[in-house]
Image (cartoon, rainbow, N blue to C red; front, side, top):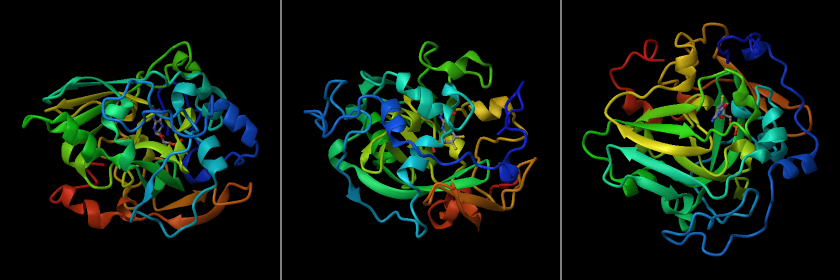
Length: 326
Ligand code: MTE
């Protein structure tokens, strides 16, 4: 990805050699903050207090789901140490190094706009911890690499149902936490902070869209977007916004960070599409990262339309020209 005023990523896409996939498990755990074991009492209860949810790294109970990818799952080290979370810096190793500074407890999500239940919510008010599912999804980054990761969460539709959007709601906008004292990356005008994203309401309600609280059977570490992030598996990874603090229902298409930064390169839809190249690199294939060992590169594969989820999502885009609405 390229951002305004800086060209750190100018050689991106297929040309970039991935940074070595790490190595130092202790460093990861330290950065993830106080890793506890087991659920804090009360997690899963409706209307629990803001603190009543697992701390980063704590074990989560989730049922296996039908959502699986045939390819090997990336190593946990790779998924938690090779990250994009620009609030902590633009290098892949910055999030694991710095994100532990971000306080995720207590955490409040503000819900506003076109819905019957606006207000301030604890994570446990939005996510039913008794109904967590594990879903093995490939996250396909716009930089032409992907990782297969076992995510833990609930359908976004179940969250939206609680909030009762009005008939005027056509889109859902999301916003990431912004804290200048704990996020070293936001000192730089890489993006207009806070990071914002959005989906059409029907995309957000699609069965695949996961409100995500964990990975590898544990609560999300900060570098992966604790305590609450979106995973939208048929779209490029930047749609999967991390550390969400605001959800807004709206009748107009909301602004999104990468589109604001460079509209020619990053559209609102950003569906994975091997036939629409990024202006500076091909999207026809991708490197598969983190499958094992330390090399970080296990294979190259052809990119699938909608990241392999055509059956579930093509109806959302019937009649649209996806080269225009990229
Ligand atoms: N969310 C926020 N708030 N800030 C970011 O920089 N990066 C995005 C997305 N969500 C990003 C974000 C991009 S480009 C990708 S590829 C994924 O997060 C990476 O998720 P992961 O680090 O958990 O693999």
